[in-house]
Image 1 (cartoon, rainbow, N blue to C red):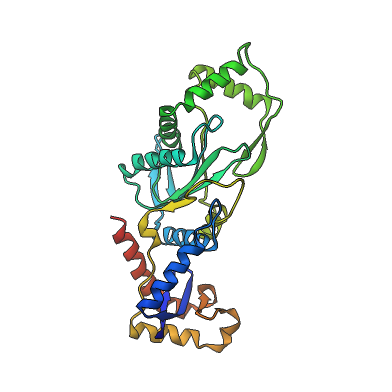
Image 2: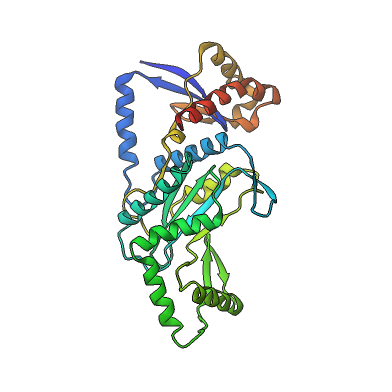
Length: 314
């Protein structure tokens, strides 16, 4: 037995066929099989990542913070990258366990809502992208990640490599190309010399293993962050490719009868039929095609969903 249900998501309205319990279980099994693609994101996983990021953006509020100098700034989301300072010597599974240790450090300090994604760099090293609505100073990000790396020997490996390279004093690296967030960047002689001086001062104990990418001026945060997270890139990663706090996987509840009437009226507006995305089992209407009046009508549904996610974050 099937029947029509409606849901209001942050970016679109959904009208879909609901199935009885037997059919739901069968469809759930199919979803598991489709998402069981080793080493790269399946279409199911890509949709889940985008859904989690949309939910994260929905619940994220712009907050005001102050620097040590007393200057103020606004923060909504961060986009962090964690890398290795030496060639990978552990399995992908072991390094994802290290990422979990790093997340636990910040969960103890208040981190609740986040999405992470694992990828391979051109040199074969695994690295991680994380986005969250919890502000962490960039120095604290670097120090906490280096502390995790130190426990399994990567800081020592980095120190040994640098001391060997610069054993006769500063030595310029001819291969001065670096890749930052996938973009080719030239590492100048001045930059290399400054890095050498800093490395000598700290006994090569503070490698630059992190990057914090500013997203404060990005208009469509969901689309921008999803572009980084929801794509297959580089060599395959062994095991799980991504994860998030469980509350970000929640879906809106089906609308009540009185609310269904509002959404049904919107779907039946034939003037927007060309903008609808249709399949055999569902119809999607992006919110950007709704009028201001209709957006106001569905705003309570979105707010209800937002509260559901926040309540589940603990």
